[in-house]
Length: 159
Image 1 (cartoon, rainbow, N blue to C red):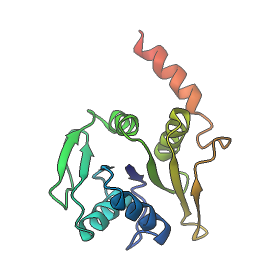
Image 2 (image 1 turned 30 degrees about the vertical axis):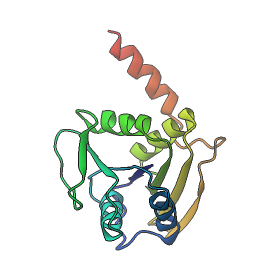
Image 3 (image 1 turned 90 degrees about the vertical axis):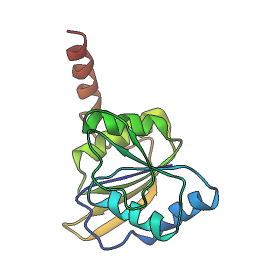
């Protein structure tokens, strides 16, 4: 299970709904893949450590910034975009915290959707201090420019 989220998520604790998903993964002894960026990823790591869970891999790009549980690490790429894409490809399911419809997370949601990975989404707005949570909606467009970016990225790579 991939735990992914916005660096802008500055809550002191994970939402109850998210903790329940992580607890379910722990109960099934699932491998948890988590990033090391500030925000949601640090909360995910702190929570996993508080549970004493060991089946965790911390994914990073160039350098490792945070590994509170001294878990196994894996370099998933040389930059943020490659790291995120490869972590998504490596997971079977995901829990994502998305704050203020950030673009990077929106792209990741589109990739998760396209790959058919079961994803639980916790969407938070700091402007209205509201949140919605539930399974990723296969009919919803999370990043309206996703396919255009993919097209131009592939064209650029072939030049």
